Amino acid sequence: MSQHRWTAAQMPSQQGKTAIVTGASSGLGLETATALAAAGARVILACRNPARADAALARVQEQASAADARCMTLDLADLASVRTFAAEFLASESRLDLLINNAGVMALPLQRTADGFEMQIGTNHLGHFALTALLIERLTLSGDARVVNVASLAHRWTRGMDLDDLNWERKRYLKWDAYGKSKLANLLFTFELDSRLRQAGLSIKVAAAHPGYAATNLQMVGPQMENSAIGRLAMSLGNNLIGQPASMGALPTLYAATAPDVAGGDYIGPDGFQQLRGYPTKVGCRRAARHAPTAQRLWTLSESLVGAKLL
Figure 1 (cartoon, rainbow, N blue to C red):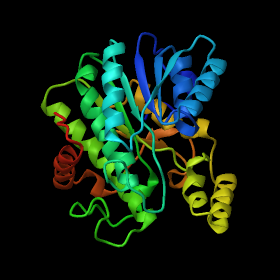
Figure 2: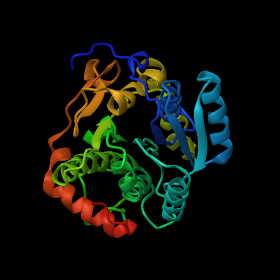
Figure 3: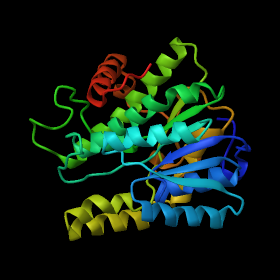
Figure 4: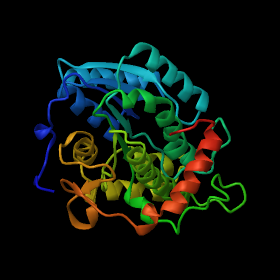
């Protein structure tokens, strides 16, 4: 990419645009929402926990004094919540320019969503798939809309998708493999959505981004839920020694959402060693993430599971 060491200060004005940021109550989502609001966008903080959402909104308004922002409740692990959120958004907001599918859970012990999906694939992929399906028509009206799916280096940590047992109902559950599969699904979804939008002649740009190793509370959730002192120590050391601040980790998402030279199907990540840290640049992904037959099967399966057609 032509720009070097891009920061949020170089973001084009987002005046007049409306953005949804999922998982905006902390970490990357909060940084993303704050930066977009500071650039003039109307920002919807889509969060599961209303109390944490209110605290996040106060932080956004503190950091960006003229912020035009509001909170809306969204639990991606409950399709009824996704449908309610979408209906309320469409009824109350006249436009949608940026859909930032940021929220995620990582390395949880085996749990299931309200609809019976394995929690990581259910939250990280299926919930966002359903949300995008319900909002795609409003995005098409913008003329210059973007969808950004936040993926992860962890998409390389799995042998691949198992579409015959997507929800871990038969095989032995492995929390890190499940996380890797959910992040691989994010990329498969991104590239397939980009392909279908092009075929339909629609102008929405779809890109993916990953934060490298960002020091956020996401790293601590899985180990803490297992009450593993070793797990918490390992994550704490990683955050302190390798991790970059959430404000840096959010830059690839902000670049993907706003930079003029981003094209549909781009994948943005840090430019440093092993993509662990640094400034946004276009990065590569494993070949399996761009395997069209797998993406098409995942798409059909996702539509069936969430009960919503997307394109």
